[in-house]
Image (cartoon, helix red, strand yellow):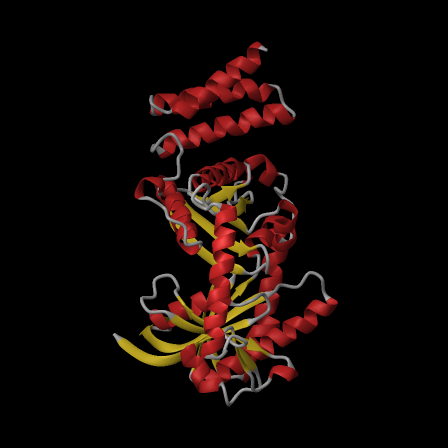
Length: 413
């Protein structure tokens, strides 16, 4: 096994799932154009090697981290100019790490790559985030400024990672701005501040009575997009969305908007920041579901409603038989990201069954029942066999019985 120290750059399209849901072929064509006209010429200019493309992402290796940062700035400035003249441009996040990588043929992997991927998720749209190891090498060699995000815990990396965002404005060159700046006061002042905060805290605590109600964060789960080649698989994406909504609603301290409120935005291009403001929530969860044969992929992003930036994103791969465990993982990671306590019994997204086949049949029945309400009375009768099939596969499936009863009731009415 061969190892070496390398500068690793990872780039990813912002909002790719949403864009492909609107115009899949156009989005892929624009991504290929960016790869040919923007990325590859700059990789060559700055001595970078394109290792591979990963769906909507790129993995690039540089021998010098200075070259990697220069390349990233060059790319983002080019894309910013393009944005001013083209409303259909793609926006990218870029993460850069200097670390140890493992070589396998032309491919690279290991913690050096994993950290770069996590940094990409912490970058702002159109921005660049770098690790502390990269910052130590480039801070006096690149005409840029830096905003320290401190040490961040990132998925699958044991130790916290120092994170910096690049500031490319001419006014910021040579600066390193810390989130701690402005709070360096004298010891005597700290004592005065502490006493004042204690008095105010006691008054606020008495007024809010936290023992009577738990503090609440709020989230809306937008309808997950169906990226399967079969458009009819939309029923499955809707089912995953509803189950995640229900499961998150069971997390203590988390307020979740209803399905009906969220599904008003189905198939609509909405800015998450504006949407969060309209719906008065702290966070927005969006994603996609893709099925190909028995293979299943769930992509999810958790967005901060105040800043519009991603605070967590991940991809979950498995088979259709893994659908429940994949949902459980999404819920658990969101709870961990928001620092909410999730008891082991609450880590299961409720679905009424643990039979993937029964679950699939039930979701088909629900989809037909809702079509009946929208347009087609014939779909009411078509839903019955699917609910019966779900019950036959799992006689204890309560939601399937409820669905069948609702169909009969509406047919009687």
